[in-house]
Length: 348
Ligand code: F6P
Image 1 (cartoon, rainbow, N blue to C red):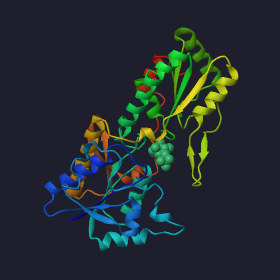
Image 2 (spheres, protein in one colour):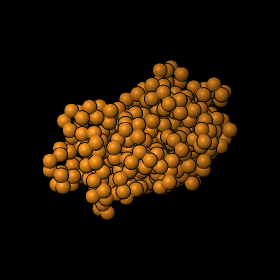
Image 3 (cartoon, rainbow, N blue to C red):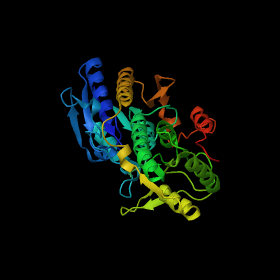
Image 4 (cartoon, rainbow, N blue to C red):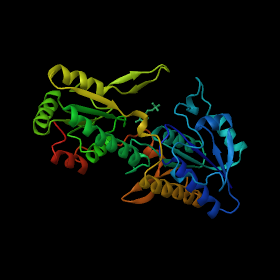
C-alpha cells in the first residue's frame, strides 16, 4: 500500500510529530506499506513532488517545529493560477499509486481534502491550527503551544507595565475565533480579554482599565486579531503580496485609548508568527502523536472521507463534509468565558 501525506496551510507546532507518528504507526501496522511525503501541501500533489518517508527520516521529529514537508497556504488545486488543476492532482495521485492520502491542515486544507474525497480520492484529515477553530474538534495541536507563547508574553510584559505604570496591549492571532486570546489571556492574568465573539465598548474598556490602574498601577490587555472596536470593522493589513490579513487592532487600541486618556501610556505588542514557531509543548507533542496514530489506524481500517478529531479526550473520526467550510468560534456561555467574566476580565 502507498500512502501519501501532506501538510497544508500555515505551519504549526506539532506537524512534524504527526508526520512521525503516522509514519511509524503505518510502518508497524500495515505490512509492506510505503509512506510518501508530498512537498509544500497540495502544490506537491499538483506538481508531483513526493519523496519516501521511513523510520530514519522521521527520527527525532517529536519536538521539532515547522514541517519537514514544507507547506503552502495558497495552493488550491481547484483554483490554481486561474485554472482548475484538480484533475492534474488526481493524475499524480494515480501515477504514484496512492491508495490513501493523509491531509494535515486547517479548515482550508480539510475543505480541499473533502473536495478530493468527493472526487474519489481515499482521504483522511488531521486537524491542525493554532487558532483551535476546526469544527467537530475540541482541541487542535499547536493551540497549546500558541497559548504558552501568549501567557509567557503577558508574564514578561507585566513587569515592564508595572515598572512604567503603563497599559500593555498584546495582540494575538486566531482569525475570527477568540480561543488563543481567551485561554492565553487567562493563563497570563490579563486584566482585559477582548475576543471577536463578544462585543465590547471602548468606554467600558477605558473605565475598566482606569479602575485597574488605580488599584494596581498597571494593566494588561489581551486582544484577538479578529476583535472589533465598538461596532467597527475588523482590522486588516494589506501586505505587498496583495493578500489582506487580520491585524492592527492592538495599535488601534493604543490610538483610541490614548486619545481618551492622554496621561497614561498605552503600548502594543503584536505576537504574530512567534505563536506558530518553535518546539511544541508536551501537550501538543502527545496530541499530535495521538492524531498521527489515529490517522494511521483509519487508513489501516479503510475509513476514508473523515478527519480525526478530539472529542471529550477521545480521538474520533468526523466526516470531512461536516468540517469543510466551518469555523468553530467561542460560544457565548463557554466555561472559559464565564471564568473570565468571574475575574472581571471581560469588560462589556
Ligand atoms: O490560521 C493560523 C494563522 O496563524 C492565523 O491565526 C493568522 O491569521 C494566519 O494564520 C496568518 O497566516 P500567514 O502566515 O499567511 O500570515
